[in-house]
Length: 365
Image 1 (spheres, helix red, strand yellow):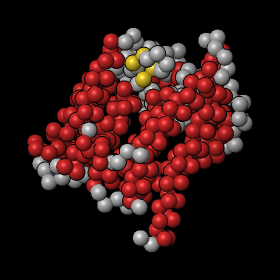
Image 2 (cartoon, helix red, strand yellow; image 1 turned 90 degrees about the horizontal axis):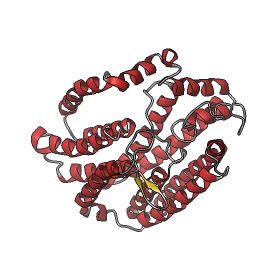
Image 3 (cartoon, one colour; image 1 turned 90 degrees about the vertical axis):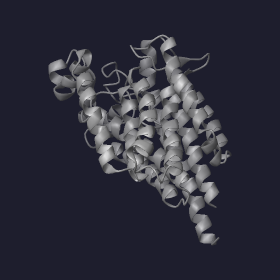
Image 4 (cartoon, one colour; image 1 turned 60 degrees about the vertical axis):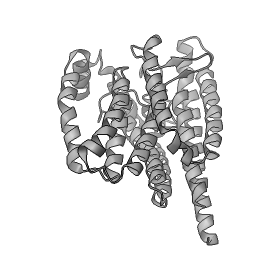
């Protein structure tokens, strides 16, 4: 193999790793910055959230190294096991007490694990394997398209009733895009989307969900209710201007913006670093996606290509949803900004998937 190609591919691995580390450093800085205020609220040390996130990052690094040393073909062999383990874990969350009205976590001695984070990865692996194995049948609605969508729909539905609307939407969005790339008919995809619209409308206009939707359309009419978070988020972003108030100088993190260290961390970054800083952060995430996509594009094996692209797509879509929620372009949903938001399960699974991308690059050499 030509030396220049070896160097280029080695550089791509370095780019993915370095971009990931940059995002993690930014995340840790802001988790301490914002989390210290949240910790004081609960009579915890200032570094409480930072230490927990740092432990998750260390565990994630171990998982990344592990993934880097596991042949990609291993995942082909264990797809059924991964699916049913994930299914079991998603059902198990309902046996644990709810947190803020949601059954999303399995409480372990040292960490609360969120199975929906595993479900993101398993959905991508399952679909990459399915589209590779059933490539000759994927254009057939009943023999190829529908079976995959049913199995993925089950995972998505379990996450939906936790409830975790953001992750459920993310999984289905990734699935539809991968199905299209994998050769599924656009008519079948549009048919599934059309079939999903009526129950979605019923859900959105029932009870509490109706208020959430209306508050998204007109948050100021629901200032003291479900519109409060969005209004505080918009105030944070708007007050940052072009250059921001400076690191650590946010006023919205002072108990005005709930979940500022998780679901709305981008708003605080925008307030402190301004439009310019936010743009740089989004550019770093975009660069990570493009580097992962480059790995996928250079892969001749369909399973590996779809696996890599699906991982990159997940990071990008998740960042966009987080951005859209923060700016009022999407209804308020709890979804993390990859590598930035506080959340052990999220950062561990994200680092594990980065390890898989690095392994794919390694196997191309």
